[in-house]
Image 1 (tube, helix red, strand yellow):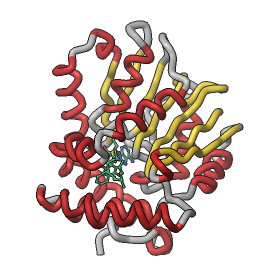
Image 2 (cartoon, helix red, strand yellow; image 1 turned 45 degrees about the vertical axis):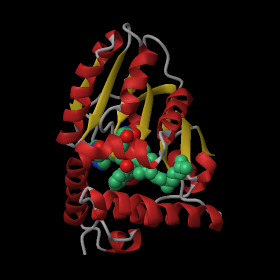
Image 3 (cartoon, rainbow, N blue to C red; image 1 turned 180 degrees about the horizontal axis):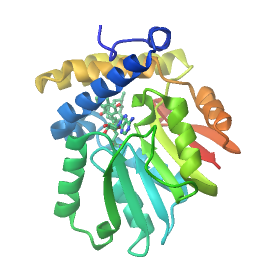
Length: 253
Ligand SMILES: C/C(=C\Cc1cc(O)c2ccccc2c1O)CCC[C@H](C)CCC[C@H](C)CCCC(C)C
Ligand SMILES: C[S@@+](CC[C@H](N)C(=O)[O-])C[C@H]1O[C@@H](n2cnc3c(N)ncnc32)[C@H](O)[C@@H]1O
C-alpha cells in the first residue's frame, strides 16, 4: 500500500524518517503528474467556485500594497497571482512549491497572463517544512489546498510562524473535514461519483481518489485552530465556506 492510501494512525505508527520522506516524494510525483490538467479540472469540478474560495483566502490574509508576501504550496499559482495583485508593483510575492511541473505551469501562466504587477512574483522550488527564508520576513502568507498534502503539518505550521512578521496573518484554505455527517456524506459522494469518474477519463483515478484519503486523515477546524495555537500563533479561527465543503483557517502571529 503506497503512503497515498495510508491513514494517519498507520502513517504515524510507521513514521520513520524514511517513511515520511517517501510519502512526501509520492505526493510530489502525484502533483507533477496532475499538473497539466489540474487547473482545468478544478474549474470543471467546482463549477469555477474554487476561484471565489481562493479570493476569500487572500482577503483574509490581510495582504496589502507594498507587502512582502508568500504563497506556500503555490502549485500553478492561482493564489500567487491574486497576492501579486494585492502587493502591487511596490510589493513582492514568492510562490513556493516542491513540484517542478506545477512551478513550470505557474511560470508559463505568468508569461501568458502578462499583467504588469506579475513582475513582482518570484517562483521558488522548496519544501514547506524547511523554508529558505529568514525569521519575520513576510507580511502575510497564503496556503491554498496545501496543508492537507504536507506530511509534517506541525513542522509546516511552525515554519509559517517563524517567517511571519509579528502581528501578521496566515490564511490556509483547504477542504473542510466536517463534523456534520450530512456535509461529510455529500463531500464523499461528490468525490466518489463525480470527481473520480471525471479524473478517470484523464487516467488520473488514483490521484483523485487520494483526495478522499487525504480529507479523511485531515484535521477538523477545531484541530487546525489548536495546531496554529500550539505553533505559537496568538489567534486562530477556522471558517467553514462553500456550504461546509471547504474551510479557511486564519491565524495571527
Ligand atoms: C481547488 C480544489 C481542489 C484542489 C486540489 C487539492 C488537492 O489536494 C488535490 C489532490 C489530488 C488531486 C487533485 C487535488 C486538487 O484538485 C477544490 C475544487 C476542485 C475539486 C477537485 C472539486 C471538489 C468537489 C467538491 C467536493 C464539491 C464541489 C461542489 C460544487 C461547488 C457545487
Ligand atoms: C492541491 S495543490 C494546491 C495548489 C495551489 N495552492 C492551489 O490552490 O491551486 C497542492 C500543492 O502543494 C504542493 N506541496 C505538497 N507538499 C509540499 C511540501 N512539503 N512543500 C512544498 N510544496 C508542497 C504540491 O506540489 C502541490 O503543488
